[in-house]
Image (cartoon, rainbow, N blue to C red; front, side, top):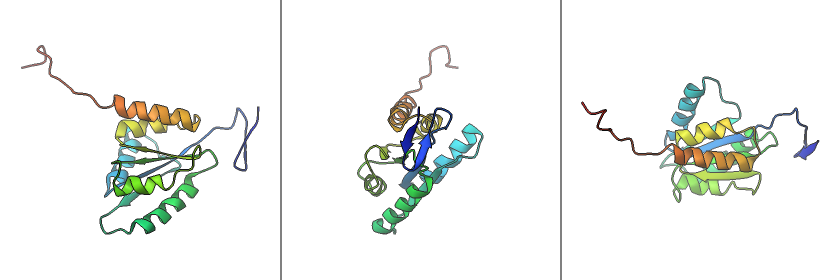
Length: 150
């Protein structure tokens, strides 16, 4: 079975590789990429990040972000991850959305990123679902049980 995707022919033997762009305040995105590299033990392919600082012009950052999306989209799409909904990084990410091609999730954390990286060879819609669940499932209250107390 062959599928045509943006000037690229895929068959069952061709692997999908969805690009990932992280846009965040300050150096959060860089730190997330470094941590994911450490956890997975391999260099991350088709992953870029963009740090947004207080002095940055958002219009300039949008242009940089669009260039990065072009660099990491091999024809299978891009998932853009950002930190806080409504803040400048997520507003920039929102401007990149092209339904079904470039999608955006907000509230990025390390479990979300690891899950996205783990499922990036699946269709974009599956990757999004797995990343959202990974981000949510990675947050919980750790309690000391009575038997753990010293």
